[in-house]
Image (cartoon, rainbow, N blue to C red):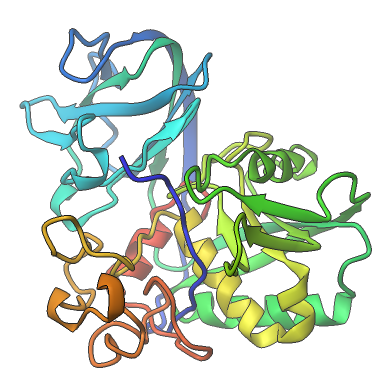
Length: 366
């Protein structure tokens, strides 16, 4: 399975939504299970149990945490047997999910095909060893939602003026999609060993240094999405550049885990605060559950990998550039202007209605 490597991108403009009447998160409901290999006998549970989900449920977020460091995923079916997440191919499932090491998160829905929500789901962890599964139910989502953003600056890496300009761009982009970004707190911490966060291309969001940086979210208020600003972020190896990375798609709605938030390079914030805001807005999209409209590389069969939303444009495989990579230039007539294209030029700020709708279903927005 492909590692959960989420590269930098940029953001969007949707129609204004009416003010939210409010939404709230219930949970977590926790239970213990023994993970099994995909295809084996599963230790599954009917969630939420014998009762159905409340009629005003808008999304369900699932978190699996294992004791070991092995790969972990979830198998999810509805009560009628419809497969939502196939643990043998979680990324290719009707409701896409990224597997992880030790920790994995799934959001229902993450795709048009997983709507409408089922009244109940059967959930089983797939991997090895003892696993704790937690579930949160989001209810009564209105139109416009608020996203509390806790900012942690690690060391004297950037001044408030540059950071304010970047966050202003984040707010502008997401406001157009019906999400008001608030900043309830800004903290500064000593740099320690995090002056430079290196990402292992083979591990992506499972990289140890990313987990170390995002664990700083334990100092942030509950219910906020944590943005950790470090000296620099890079991919291990020569010739690689990386500006920001989300802890997952989505990130868990709890602080202190190795996936709890987004990390961003202060180098970019100092160099170009507006572009930095667009990159941050893209990674926030991942944190809220959005995938790339088109991934960078073709599959072994030569096909392109797209998100699973009904109104996002797709870049077709025949336009692939050198080495089978779908470049922004080649995809310009299609989705390169979208926030969630895998890599776009500065100034691409488009989100579709379905992308805005999904972001407002996130467990992190209220």
